[in-house]
Length: 132
Image (tube, rainbow, N blue to C red; front, side, top):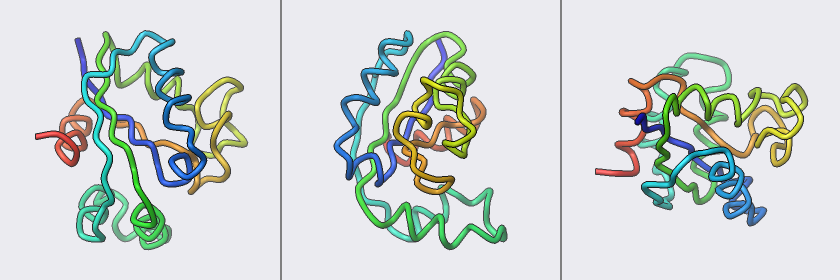
C-alpha cells in the first residue's frame, strides 16, 4: 500500500466542500488514514512550496495558502500517488477532465480546491507537515 497527501485548500474549505471531496476520494478506492486541519504560517507555506521558490507565482501561492484553513488528508491505496493525481485533475480547472475534483470544485489555477503530492518521495515530505 502506498500513502499520499491530499490537501484541501482554503477556497474549498470556505465553500464547505471538505466532506464532498473526501467522499469522492473514498468512492475512488482510497482509505483515509489521517485527517488534520491547520492554518499554515508563512514560513511553513514557503517550506511546503519550496520547489516553486523563484517562480513568478510563488509569493501569490504562499499568500493564498496562508489565507485560511487547510485540511491535510493522508490517503492509502495501491498506486496512491498516481491514482490521486488522476482523480484531482489538471491544475487549471478549465482544463481538468469532467468529474475530477478540480473540475467540480476549482475556480482558477490558484484557487483549484486541492493539492496532491506528485511523487512518493514528495508525499512523505508533504505528509510530515500534517502528521508526525
